[in-house]
Length: 307
Image (cartoon, rainbow, N blue to C red):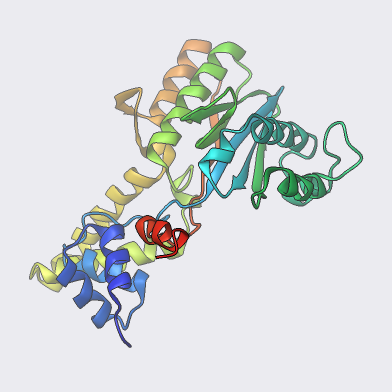
């Protein structure tokens, strides 16, 4: 397979490794991008493996809440210019409010009536495409609910209340002081926005992700020349460290790094005299996982000028 300069650049952007190392990795893995990332990590050449890839889509993340239920939706546009448009912002806000009725269920949201119209959300957005002049899309939605306690939300890079670039929901179940539970939930939501954990508990981490990490760690240990009988113990220790990095309840709490998020929940239990359980979270980052071709602005200007 021919390894193109664009592939080398993409791998370099993902990992921070040197250009020649990226080319070697792609050659060794027959152009498989994910395998090349792992190859570089195993060799100790990757500074970071960025899972989501380049964030390319524009638009807004919107959150809405009512009682012990909250939802988050992603509404995409082609440009950030449209995302700053008041009509688009109002549309995103109303879509999030509409999502509350179905608890964030995506299919139900698209079929639901858009407020103040006889159209479905899906059809209203299609009609708006003609008005705004850009392709628009309700990409995804999700919701969380608890019987008692709070579903807290946090919006990062907020452009107007409830709308921004990252939206997080955190469900905290407790019969204790509602205000304190809600405040703790908001702090955890801010933490999630900053750390992007993979799961709430270690049991919820995708086994495939763990095995992939384990394979990389084994190869790293072998590259260091350690004997096989020591490699197993090294890897298990590093897997425990991996869980501490990616599991929400095991992460050092950004509000107080001396305790984990799980430890902070235990401290709150003592304060309010009631059990506190972080039941789950949702984190939407605008455009994550969407790839968009990078344009050469100078070439576009030349083309427009007829050169």
